[in-house]
Image 1 (cartoon, rainbow, N blue to C red):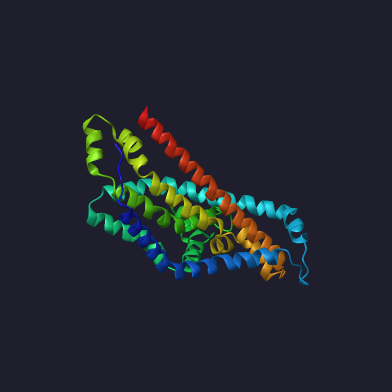
Image 2 (image 1 turned 90 degrees about the horizontal axis):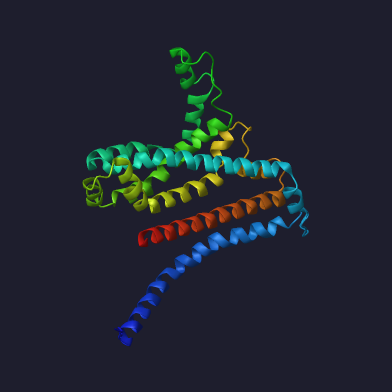
Length: 295
């Protein structure tokens, strides 16, 4: 059986698409200029010496430095560590919020969103007060007898990771909570009525249906974490140096725009590679889910 479509309807649909596209062209033009022109300027700057001459020496200097690869490894460790902790903490929290009554869920969500209502610099220095040797956490631990001496919780990787998770957790939670809230409760009841345990319901119903939200939250956390600067600079105390702090140091200390531009391009390439890998992983998971449903 063949279905024929009225050519007039197709023409109207095409005119409608062109009309809405024309409405968005000014915004697309402005966003394109704001996004593309700085990148082109950075690429050009990466080939310039301080005297304005073109060279590839900036790339040779940056890519041959062990500090660059150490900063790249630190960036990946911080980003992936932040993502892992956000998944471990945020997914059960989103499930609890989605399962709670609307009034309770809204109240809990307000508490979760409180960090986003405070300036990031204020939050970072707040963690500095809490985590330092004479801070509230160490005072509570030593005062209760849980630890005999103060723990090194700040000016290291641990303190930086804590501060980044505190900032990123609400950003991860929002899309996951939205995905879990939209799951039809009848599907959960049907699974339970057929004898599925709570773990089986979570594994076979809730997690597959909320995979899109978890993927979106993971992308947000990774993209933000890769370029994070304030938290590593304050809580790292100069001992935790991702690519962002290397870029700032190249500019503020050495006024080396060429090297800073190369590091910026390296950061952009890293973001692009991670984005491609995440999209490939999502497509593979979708194909496996379709194959499993047909089996």
